[in-house]
Length: 574
Image (cartoon, rainbow, N blue to C red; front, side):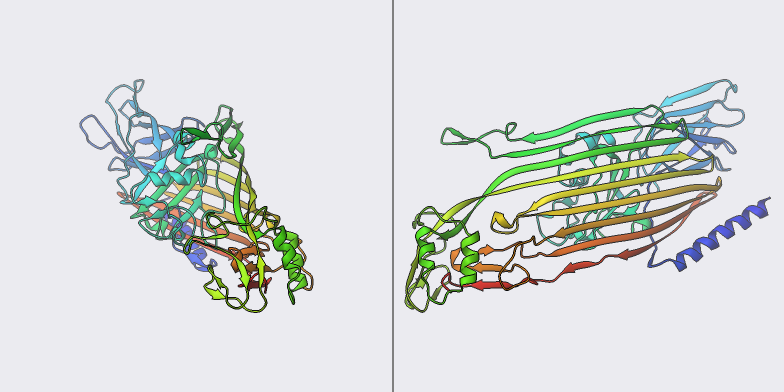
């Protein structure tokens, strides 16, 4: 019998090694998606109890996981869903002992000590573990984990990157301050692009400037962990922070939730200037959604689903420097001026209501010299902004400031679903799906006529199967897929004689840019396929972990700088 078990282990180990060598772009890391419990079972004198049994019963789902105690009185229970458990130990000649409400934390190995009293078989002793501090003595990694209540209520996680913002509460983590490539927090002074983002252990990294592909809504997150230093080998993807998110699951009791978080101009204090009050500009931030979870089959199969919509709307404004009505009239008389360019300029540039004065601090005023941006060229007139002289005939083009409305809004939709299935005492399955869809106004153009909607979509699928070959040999197989799409469009603007609308930049009018976002058109489609296998073998006092991961990236990207053409003019009259 023992020989057959050894043969089975050898087959599994050889298969894992062969698959790791045959994988596409193999990697020697594999993130944990669960929590483990290790501990000892002893009698009242502290002597080890050999040959006992330990079970971990999930308080919410009722799912029970069983482990055997070795000759040294030690046990290990791996691949537990994050949550609260009742840990029960039993052995012949001892009363049953239960440690209630024991917390299992993401990416951590919690330690439990079970002290079984000597008594009759009918006696049971229960001890509450509500105040139990989760201490992982098996690793040196620096990690902070956040539970569901913290994720929902801490204001730091209210916007932006959601629960990822909570990592800013850790030592050695700070905002990037806009410095360095990538998006997200800076860990240990490194660039954000050095971070690694995962959901249920599945790759969640953008392949262009990094950052997460999708965001799981706060109320749909089961637990979030941030590892900042000295992380274990399975977290070898990046040398920055390791940010892992798990998705909530269902329970034996049907539970639902409807929520809304909002902030607007009416809730904020008005600005006080010289004893008066200035009404707040529009700012409406509204995040709302609902969720439901429960059993499909009690103690066996569970579901969970969450939908959230997040809208932000505000009105901003910006000054641009353009000619007055008289200035446009004068421009129409300039000899040899391109009729095409003048037509485009007249069509899109707004008319200034009045000429600028030297005391105005705005788009038509040069703060460095205290002079106006005047477009008067006769070969001797000095242009204060450019520090150059004009040439040709003299033209006086009066300029003025125009405050143009710059409405900005974004709409973000997120759908999250999960399922957990305990197939048998040796097999369990987890499935996760996250979908994000966003649309926002691209305000990188100067004039609102060229503001366009930029779509961004993301998907992540995670499938995991856990199998216990023996009480001391466990395996996790994981399939993952992520897809990201974003686009910077150019719109349907037409320019006579060209197949695409270029950018016209006029330096002596404060750098007025006529045309769409200069980085458009651009598009990125990302597809990441991932297979992971983890094998845990407990032998005596030792726990050996083997793992491999293979990924395949398909990520076509379209971006050519200034493919539409960029035309810069020092003088408006050129």
